[in-house]
Structures are given as structure tokens and as C-alpha cells.
Length: 222
Image 1 (cartoon, rainbow, N blue to C red):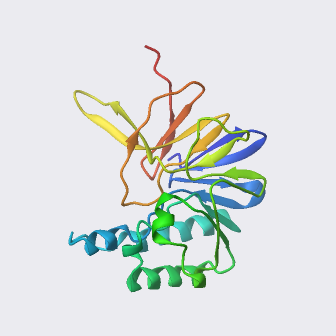
Image 2: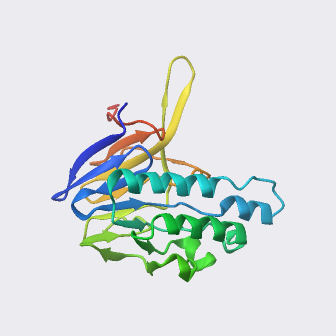
């Protein structure tokens, strides 16, 4: 099972992980985008009965990634929380318990559009928050992808997905990474998030993942 793809990007070696994250071994750093913690609680606040299991499960996934890679840093590329209404006591307890498990890990957040509504994480989580964009460990980190940037960057926000036809009339649709010499756009890490279909742009490579396996999609020439 192919769970990792290594790429060379602007003089650095990165691993694209099937569990929708990027690992930079040189700096012992994990990048993830759009966890949207507390999204189910936000739905509950609006009267929609969605069980709050995703935040706990996503925290467990991230803990496992930190343990497997030996990461010393985690950089969240925006939308740590989904909404202010999702910052419930239950979510606070889940995140504080998670933080205790990874207390030696440095945590950084590039504020996304949802974060400006929800507010920064609770101080007890010890997450250093920055505006978009910010350079961390020598890499430009963004939430919002931009068409033009002076520096190559990593970003999230769009929750990229890719669809292609299977046998018969079946269609396969999964999260994906979009890689270009100018950027790496990460899929949403949160398990309770939607997808926006992307198409190949000039110079793009698309790596599709179902959470367990990852592989590159060859560009289809028309």
C-alpha cells in the first residue's frame, strides 16, 4: 500500500502523506490544512443533529502522524476551528486532552477565514497564531492560495478534490494535493469537510488520496 510519495520541491524534499498531510523531514515539520475542528458542534448549534466524533478522530489521526514521523512542529494552514459556535466545552476538552499527548510538539497556526470568525485557539493549547501569509522555518505559509506570489508557498482553503471515471458510469472522487513549482495546495485534513473539484493547470501535478493510499494522476491530454 502506497501511503507516502516523496517529491523534490524548490530545493526541499517533502513527503505527501495519504492521511492528507505534508511532512518536511529536514525540519521535522508536519503541515496540515483546514481541520475545521468543532464543525459538527456548529451544526448542532444550528439544530442539525450531527454527532461530534470527527474532532476526536482527527486529533487521534494527527497524534499518530506525529508519532510515526517524529515531527517536532505542526503548522496548521488555516481554519483550525470551523466557527465560534463550535468552540464548545466538549471540543475544548477533546483538544486539551490531545495537547497533553503532544505537549513537546510546537504548534503554529496561519489564520484562515474561518479563524477570524471563530477567534484564536484557547491559550492553554499553546498555539502560536499568525496572519496570512507568514514565513515559518524559511517557507511561506498561507491559508488562501494566490495567483501571484514572490515566493513559493504551501496553502489550503479550497479543499481540493479530483474526479475521474471508473468502469461503466461509476465516478471516483477523492481529496488531492495540487503541486506546482509555485505552490503546494493541501487537501482538507478535517474528515467532516467538502471537496472542490480541481483541474490540471499549467505545470500542475495532482496526487489523489483516499486517506489510506496516495498516487499521482497522469495528466490527460485532450
